[in-house]
Length: 362
Ligand code: UD1
Ligand code: UDP
Image (cartoon, helix red, strand yellow):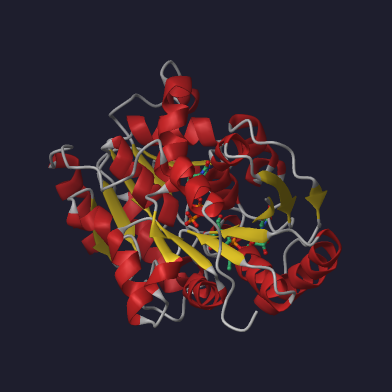
């Protein structure tokens, strides 16, 4: 069997890292195509180094743009590539525009789509990721889910249960495999911070960055944090913060460039608490037993709340500060969700090796 794995954005690189050796061990030849949705060295190259990920065989150079421009450009370039390569399947991960582009380009060439991290739902259609998830799942021949709730979501949407396999959370496996490599790492010291004595923050969702009133509430909460805040800033967010004069390092908040994966895990592990709107960081904080405050209206990672690792607050200063106080004094003991372990990649490889039923009529 020969498959092509589509990646494009930061969380994609992390999700495919453990897969590549597992696929090879199961006799599945896999090549990576990088759409180029993320292209800065700190948003892309660093992950290939940190995760020892094989270099992409193809780089499509799609870059930034509106949703339609970015998705359509990726589709055109992927269609051209897939039409020549004609792999047995295309594997897409997560919920970014490159995921949707890969699924659309493949399905119309009658190439089966495999979606890893299928079935997550925020039920919020203003989120571009929710649209990407819904469409990708409907087009997929094999749907690999990270939590049991995802299976239920898919069945409710009419997906044939025979196409769904619960494999667990691949982000958890990446993290577990990287833990030995961060044992001696103390990334916080580089920012003059002490383990257990700072809050780590990330913000990049358009619902926060593109609404000055929400960004301002979050910034105000971070400025009033009882502990110093380290904020590695996503390239989408930096110009928005500057435009509205919202934060500077003088406000007790250290603004940093995005960091590599191993540094990020070290920072998450050593933080007293995390304030974020990231999907992946909600999961990692759960794995690392660092309490998390999620500054969003909804989350598709509900399991992290159910186990007691995460609390969901909107972008309201007082609510964020209340949740942060509670998080800082809360227990760091909670159960890790089912199958968030180091064998997810093996279950993915087994699911692929056992064959993929084409969609009806294909
Ligand atoms: C994308 C995903 C989001 C994911 C995030 C991970 C979609 C719709 N969104 O959001 O789900 O959580 O990646 O980080 O796919 N930029 C740079 N350098 C880069 C990449 C981006 O400067 O290497 C800037 C550009 O100004 C660009 C903006 O960031 O316009 C947004 O990038 P884009 O890929 O469109 O979306 P993200 O916000 O990164
Ligand atoms: N991450 C990183 N450096 C950073 C910020 C995030 O390595 O400066 C990692 C983080 O540890 C997680 C992933 O990027 O593994 C999450 O990506 P992001 O928050 O960009 O996207 P989302 O998960 O929300 O789609």
